[in-house]
Structure formats: C-alpha cells, structure tokens
Length: 119
Length: 109
Image (cartoon, rainbow over the protein chains, first blue to last red):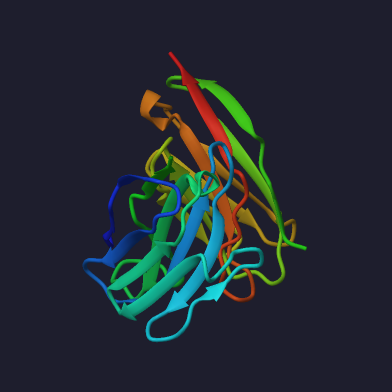
C-alpha cells in the first residue's frame, strides 16, 4: 500500500522551544495532507488540512500561529509547534491523500506518528 | 451536528467472533472507512463501504446500511494481535473523515 513516513518518531523538547515534524509520501503524490493530534484514550482530532502550494485550513480552536503548517511539495508537509508548552505534549499523526493505484478515492494513508513530550 | 457512536470497549475470546457496531450522523455521506489502531501507533486501513451490504476481506468483514446510518465490523477467528482500537470513520459531504473515539477490543486467551 501507499507509504507515508513521519520524522522524528519521538521528540523531547524544553518548554518555549520549537519543534518541526516532517511528513512525506514516499510512493505517491499527496494532493492533500492532514495533521491530527491524539491524547491518550481519545479520538483523533483533526488540526488542519493542507493542499500543496496553498495555505492550510485550520480547525476551530487550533491556533495557526502556534502550529505552522507548510505543504511546499506534493510529497512533503511540515508541522512546526512553536513555543511549545507541556500541554502540547501529545501524539501527532499526519496522513496523506492522493492518487494511489489500488487505493480508494479519499482514503487517507497515515504516517507512523510523532510522540512529542515538552518538559 | 456530526456524530459517531461506537461502544467504548469490548472483550472477546481468542478464536471467537466479535461484531463492533457503529451508528453515525453526518452532513452528507460518501462512504465509510474502518481503521485499526494499536496503542501508540497510527491507524491502518481495514475496509471501505460506499454501497449497502457486506464486504468480506479474509477474517474481517464490514457491513453498511446507509438508510439506517449503521455499519458494523465483524472479526472472525480472533487472534491476540487483534487487540486494538477500531475506528469507524464516515466521509461527509466535504469528503472529510469524521472520527469517533473508537472501540477498544480486548482479546483474552
């Protein structure tokens, strides 16, 4: 199936610093990428949707100045958590959607996730 | 509003069969996905239904009734590795996946 990579898989940072997470589609072109956050035992929460070359659309309640999303190419999107605080500690997951032979239209292919811990 | 309703947790025995139900209310409907998510990992695709009826895929089957806003995932010959959360996610009119909290399935030997 389609492969999406995410880097880093785990990161620990100090409060007030910024962290960048990369999401790459390895064997298909991702016209749309999604960023999710998931707290323990809770559902996936969509943070933002981004289309290649345009500004991301953020969900209500998600601060766009704090969570910077860049989707500069059809295979790469980045999420930067700026001035991170302990409450930003969570599991961040990206997914990508695009044409992939054998896949369903509108299927999302998920990266393995990034565990962020802010101390 | 949009709403997904699944049981929070289910327990089943290795080798048995379990059915995980999902009812949904969405603004528009363009099909429904089932995903499996192991603890600490990202979701992985299990099935997609867009028409009414049963889709069978090995040990897993998924059923959809659009008129009832209802789907279920059927897992047969349960294995310990099937212990995970199962997420029902319909596609709304904007082709956005709507996520519920999922059902945590515990398999006992």
